[in-house]
Length: 305
Image (cartoon, rainbow, N blue to C red; front, side):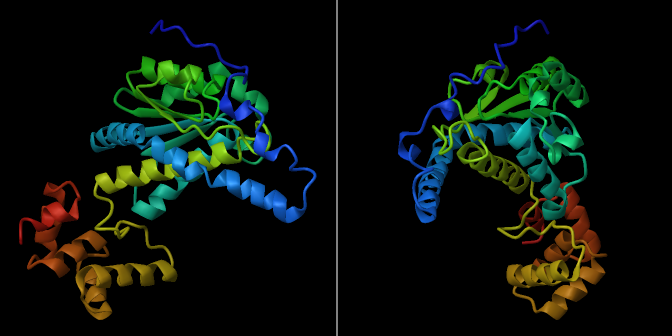
């Protein structure tokens, strides 16, 4: 694709770079007042995210279609943005039983940049394009950048779009230059930071909220929960085993012993156990119903109720 890339690099023009008039004396006030000022700015973030929900819903639907079709979701970011993306992707397999590599986070500068400063890597447009070589047609690429102009993310979105992927930009800049590379622009206008340009503050908090909501909503839509129970979680220690039994008991009204027995009969598959507890189905019929229902418990139960 010969699409012209937008101008990137300079951080000028981003709301996060403007000076915040509410915190100009933050270095001259007592500790409690420093914290109060920071907290007051943080309190504006949820409202800014709420204003972006319509576009976030579009991004969720794009990602649901990709994952339901066997494709992948990719995050691309540099610095704080990339680290937040890595955290979100890493938590999905244990929380929702999502198969490894279905949601992949790419950080400018690679693993070294996770715990070390790597500011130069964010200017590596070619590095972003190279990272996007893992993207395939039908995937979705999400670029995460507070300024909306990070060269690494520009290269990644450009490369992903050239490969036939859907593209999403998550930024704190409604006029982000990179919005021209995105099918969906989730712009969370958090405004000037308490410390000018420190996007690990409000912009970073907004990114955490957006990615949490994006991935959670996607996996809810894909049937990785039953009601508000994370029924597909990976049970890897005693605390989680107890939690799984408690969720089965709360979801079905059965006692813990009956839930434990159902799990044994279901070979440890919590969805199969859930269907057998809520219907007349035996484990084999429950498993077939779940396959036919795409793993969505509510749909599987319609066969029996």
